[in-house]
Length: 130
Image 1 (cartoon, helix red, strand yellow):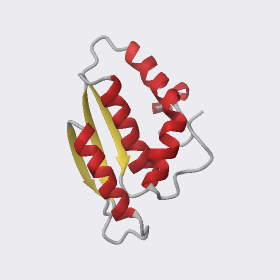
Image 2 (tube, rainbow, N blue to C red):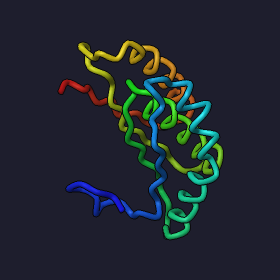
Image 3 (spheres, rainbow, N blue to C red):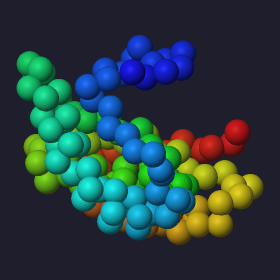
Image 4 (cartoon, rainbow, N blue to C red):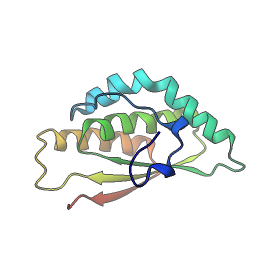
């Protein structure tokens, strides 16, 4: 079950997890973890969609600096575009801060931005200034 102060917001049956992240590598998140969890993600989305009376949109929150948020996040976005083309896709994308210490952050962000331009109907940029 989800832990932490906001754990109750998430249904355990919709959580897909692994031991490792994508190692700050967009390609690993998009090309390895995306296909690896494709069916699990689609099934979780399908179960949720079936409970909706009038599905209007999907809202994806993710970061762009690391590999999981940028790579896997944009992979999931492309799945939503492919399987639910008539449903709006909004993203709330957290951009890395200027003093980010992850050397691959600019590359991850650039690769993710291309996918966002292809598959998102609206991108709400959030500056990570923390």
